Amino acid sequence: MEVALVYNVKKDESSAVESGGHPSKKTESQHTALLPQAAGVDEYAEWDTIETIHAVRDALSLHHSVTMIEADEEAFEKLKQLRPQIVFNITEGKFGASREAQIPAMLEMLNIPYTGSDPLTLALCLDKSRAKEILAYNNVPTAKFVVVDSIDELNFDAVPLPAMVKPLYEGSSKGIFNSSLVHTKEELAKQVQHVLSEYRQSALIEEFLSGREFTVAMLGNGSDVRVLPIVEIKFDSLPENVNPIYSFEAKWFWDQPDNPLNIFECPAKISNELQSEIERICKKTYKVLRCRDWSRIDVRLDKEGKPNIIEINPLPGILPNPEDNSCFPKAARSAGLNYQEMLNSVLNSAIKRYGIQ
Ligand SMILES: Nc1ncnc2c1ncn2[C@@H]1O[C@H](COP(=O)(O)OP(=O)(O)OP(=O)(O)O)[C@@H](O)[C@H]1O
Ligand SMILES: [Mg+2]
Image (cartoon, rainbow, N blue to C red; front, side, top):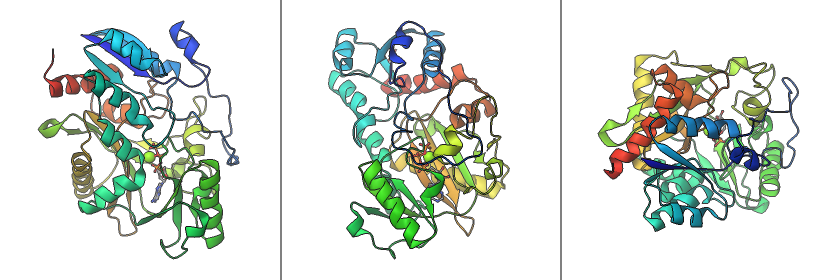
């Protein structure tokens, strides 16, 4: 088929994509020091590197003819002219809480099929409070929370401490630092202020789920949905004296290709009972949020050991190199799917859903 791969490439790398340039390396290497919450340190964290974009292109090219389209301001015209039979969408967008929905909305307008969730689901999942409201209505367990739009609104008793303070609509751990877990009212106020001023968006304050953490890769649609082997995030691999959260520092600084953190265990070592319960709530989450083709769902146990949904990623991270820690490809490998098979399975789910070919 004629497939267009639509992507956002990390800043300063777009010219190299077209010319087949080399992948960028992470330049910082801070394995033990805590990072300051520097403004802009995580600005392009959600976007893909050249290496990932080329790996996706190469995987799809095994079976299809692939054209690359950068999701910039010319994307609509390029898509309109090219009219691919289907788009493989990995665009994260740049502006606003609906940024992941923008390319899919253009594709709906052009009546071009595409992989993954529709604009409504993408926008709902990016706004963590909206997603949690839908989960709560459907009796899917998720931590107590409150949204604060300005510091004057902060009610110290709304959520018990310790709590997590997060930007309302970010991903890739943008705005989630070691300091996002707060134990005192002072820390809470400081962290809320930080989110409001640095990220210029509301802060989500959530009850801290103190138990083990898992992430669950989902593939397919309807009765064909597959829950891939569950990945556990092992916090004992983090530097000493840091909080047990999968923070920006843990994802991008303490974990380096030349000194990787041994942070994932897949399949997770859990009882059959816990596995069934995690699978049940993830399937229900996927259904009630109307996810399509693929998603990765983050789960954490509360102090009673009961699984709760943290958040849903309808556009999961897909680093191609098995040495880089990337949950979806790791779960796929554990299920016997290599990187190429995993991506083609996503595409085939979309092709089947549209009934095309
Ligand atoms: N309520 C909570 N209780 C305990 N830990 C939490 C909670 N919320 C977030 N965390 C921790 O912070 C991490 C990042 O939070 P979250 O998954 O919401 O952010 P994200 O940036 O959207 O993540 P991703 O990189 O998966 O897109 C989680 O993996 C978890 O370790
Ligand atoms: Mg997450």
